[in-house]
Amino acid sequence: MKVEQIYTGCLAQGAYYIMSDGEVAIIDPLREVEPYIQKAALDKAKIKYVLETHFHADFVSGHLDLAKKTGAKIVYGPNAAPAFEFYSAKDGEEIALGKVKIKVLHTPGHTMESTCYLLIDEQGKDTALFSGDTLFIGDVGRPDLAQKIKSDLTQDILAGYLYDSLQNKIMPLSDSIVIYPAHGAGSACGKKMSTETQDTLGHQKQTNYALDPKLSKAEFIAAVLDGLVAPPGYFPLNVMMNIQGYESIDQVLERGHHALSPAAFEIAANETDALILDTRDAQTFAKGFIPNSINIGIDGSFAPWVGAMIPDIKQKILLVAALGRETEIITRLARVGYDYTIGFLEGGIDAWHKAGKEMDHITSIDTAALVELKSNHPAMAILDVRKASEFNSEHIKGAQNAPLDFINESMAAINKEKTYYVHCAGGYRSMIFISILKARGFQNLIDIKGGFKDLKDSNQFNTTEFKMPTSLLL
Image 1 (cartoon, rainbow, N blue to C red):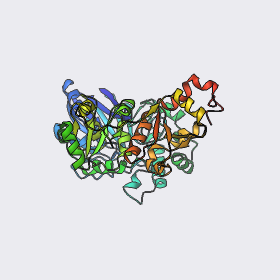
Image 2 (image 1 turned 60 degrees about the vertical axis):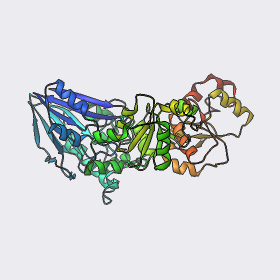
Image 3 (image 1 turned 180 degrees about the horizontal axis):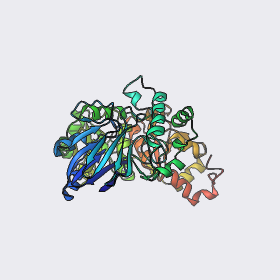
Image 4 (image 1 turned 180 degrees about the vertical axis):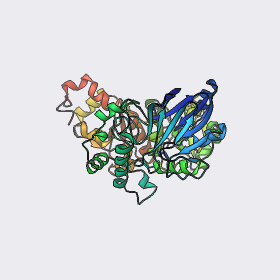
């Protein structure tokens, strides 16, 4: 028997490869399926099942392409009703895979079809639980997503189902079982997930607030719902793609992989409603970019921020990328349902510049420059675009919180004629924020390079009114 966790950091997502005696099951695969097919080929094994723990909201699963390319059977637990051929497994059913078995545990709560898969080894011992979004390390799945699809399922009702699932299906299992969740820290599918990507059930019983045996159902519901913020807008759209089906990743890649000369790129930008997405590093972007393009760097939490910032998953996209990374970016867009990349700038931004095309830039200053400016202009306006929870924990005295994840509301509170100095935690989100607002006509936004981390770490604040911790921070 072989169990492998395939973890994708930018999505904080765990897919799983289980092999026994030449047969393979893949749990919650990503959109691009070739790595799973190649892995099975190396093991001289056949992919027999694609097991889905639920209809995912934060990414588009690879179940359809994987089934089509390998002949594998798509399996969901009870209550699932997708628009394609699948096997509806019964609660408690045992699925044979080589010399092992996988037991279906229906665990509604995160969604009504949510299902965990219990791995039973060759000796008949319960070994691992693939817990999907029902149980995370340090947390449980948020119970407010299914209501976006079915209005009569309130978050309170779903949280009650989740409590029953945990108490009746998971808590009775052996403490030695390894928990393999679908997500880790950084995912919007929970609020307190650990950076660890696996743990024993016994340790989770001791440390996971949601598994506290002293919690009544009412107390559990209150604890799980406390502090939830609105999920990203693209979540329901991804759910519908996972239910209804989607184009093959091969077609998406073919459509997106059109190299456009600067002239052709400019024509496409002017004659279509395509959004220009520049995926380069924030500071590289700031030095020169195509006017009205927005920056979401590929080397960060790329897919979740694309989903949060671009409301229409059918939005046509023109890419500006570092040379050689175009296919990677098109693939990562497709992971969250953005299938309509229509081309990329051939030769990158250098080709655009050499062609004499118009360029724009964003002013970015370091902490030393900020100190000097602050000494001369004590009332200068500082925008902190981190989440409200980050801001409330610690922030620069006098700063205004304008969270990136609620950019439309934040934008409404900003005066177009006023100059603002903008920061996040490290410089990634602030550039997203400024680039989007600049494309909407806000010209007086200046980036603080390095963000809040540099503000805290720099010794330059020791002799200024920013002196830490009492003057700089609240």
